[in-house]
Length: 141
Image (spheres, helix red, strand yellow):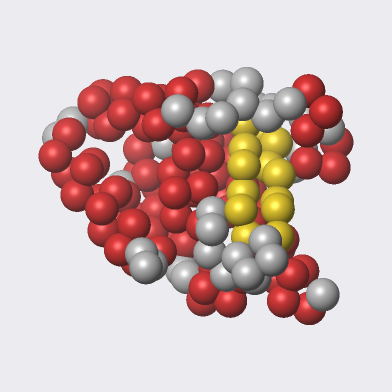
């Protein structure tokens, strides 16, 4: 079974193959296009992520086997792509695995921290914090 660390290593390798940040942005946007859209009903206040300049929704679905599936959407192309990166790392994982992972170092390894605007970086951090909070809530449930 794949680990978060393995999936991060794959993403880092994919980003490295692309070279410049113009190509990497296009790739991130392409990842976002592959996300399944949320329903209008799922685009509600309870699923909305606070701290993002764009509209962002994250749906958290605990599974019978203890894993958590995340689905998300945004009204901004690059943000949809950032959601796709987060989902690739965290969706389908167990809450303890999510909580044990250092997401900030993952962003650094991907080079995201230095190539996103302050607003986008804050939004990405807000999305990651929401995933962590939801994972934490499931460990105490």
